[in-house]
Image 1: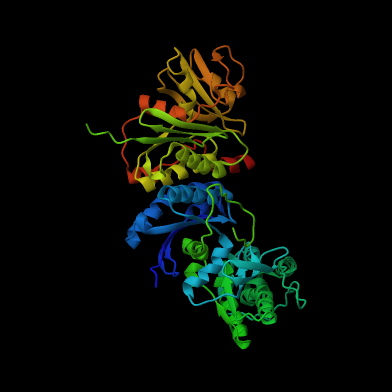
Image 2: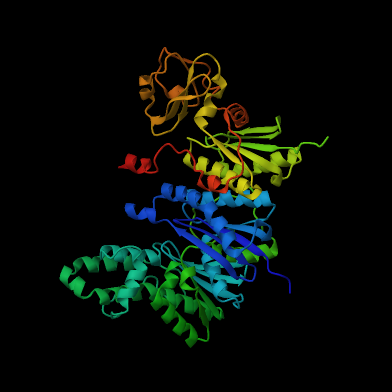
Length: 339
Length: 227
C-alpha cells in the first residue's frame, strides 16, 4: 500500500481561524482552531474585525501545526482552503495565504466549498463510508439534502425555500432571551420538556416534496411565545423548547428517511452545526435503523468550523488531480457546490 | 573568483485599487507590471506574479526578499497583499519589508526642494495623508481626516502628491503638479525606498507573524458611520 500524503488545510470563512494537517487516509494529525472571542463585545460577528484577526492568527497557527505534528513544509503534498460560502473578506485572507504558500512550495492548491467540507467531516470519524450516500446539511444558514453518487459527483435534491433550520433555533432562543447560538441552549432545555406540549406547524409536509420551509414554523413559534404570559413562558420553558425543537427536526428526519427509502440509499450523513443536536441525532438514527439504514455524524468537535474538514473534502480532489488555478477567487454565495 | 549568489527581490503593491509588482535581480530591474482593472487583486495578483516568474525564468523558491506597500489603503487589498507576501516569505524563509503607501506615493517629489504632502483617497469623504520633508522624513501624520483639515497643517511651501490630491480644496500654497499622472507610484518605487531608507533585514518568524497592515482607520469606522 502506498504511503498516505499530507494535506495542509486552512479555514477562515467566519470567525474561526483554523489550520489542520490531515493525511489522505483521513487521519487528523492536528486541527488547530483559534476562535475570535473579540466579537462578543459587539453582539455578533463584525466582518472587518474577523478579517483582521484571521490575518493576525493564520501564520502562527500554521507554524504551530508544524510544531505539533513534527512535520515540515517538505512533507506536505497539497494545500487546501475553503473559498465559499462565508464572509468574503475573511475567506480572502485564507485564500491569499494558501495560494501564495502553495505556489512558493510548488504544491497543488485545492479549493473547497465550506458546506461540502462539513459533509466530509464524517469521513474523519467514519473512514469506511462509501458512496452512494445522502447528506443532510443543517446549519444557521443552510438546510440541504445532498445525494452523492460518488465522492465528487452530487446533486442537491432538497433545500430550504426560505429560512434555515439553525436560524429557527437561533430566532426562538432570541425571542426567549436565551442567548446565541440558540441550538445548543434549546437542545439542553428540551431534554426536560414534552415535545408534544405545543403543536407548531411543519412546513412543506406533502409526500414527495423534499424541500424545506421554516418561515411558517418560525412565525407560529414567534406568535405563540408573544401571546404567552411571561410567568407561563418561564414555567413552561422546557416544554416550549422541546416542542420547538421537534417542529424543527421532524421535517429533517422525515424527508431524509423518505428520500433515502425511495432511492435505495443505505447511508445518511449528518453535517453542519445542527448536526450536534442530540434529539436530531437520536431520532434520525432510530428511524434510519428501523429501515435498515445507517446514520453517520461527525464527532462533536468536528461539527464546528475547522480546517480538518476542509482537508477531508480536498482528499477526493487530491486523489483525482482536481486542482485550482491561481486566479480562483472566494465568493459568498450560499449552498453546497463543487468548486 | 566565486560568483555572488543572485538576490531575487519581489516588490508588491495591492494596497490601492490599482496594483503593481516588480522583480529585481540584485540591482537590475527584470520585470514590472501595473494593473488597473476592475477585477479584484484576489484574482489578479497571483497570476501576475506567476507570469513574472515564468517570463524571467525564475522559480518561486528563488525569491529572496519581498518589499511591500503595506498601507494605508483598501482594507481588503492590504490583506490580499500582506497575506500573499507572508505566504511567500514563510515558505522561502526570506525577509519581508513593509513600507508606508503614503511614503511610496511621496517618492516622485523626493529631493525637489520642498516638503511633500502625500494624499490617498480613503473614501467616506476622508483622505489618508502625511507630511514629509524633502528627504522623506515624516513631519506630520499619517492621519485619516477630512481633506480640508490638511490645510490647517504647518506644511510651509509643499508639493502635493497622491491619488487623493484632487479631493483637497484649492490652496495657493500647494503646488500640485499633474496629480493624476503622478497619482500612483507603482511597486517599482519600493526598491528605491528600500535602497535609500531601508535597513538591512533577515528572516524573522516573529516579526513576520506579527506584521499587520497599516490600516490607519479603525475596524469599527463603518459601524460608527452607519450609527
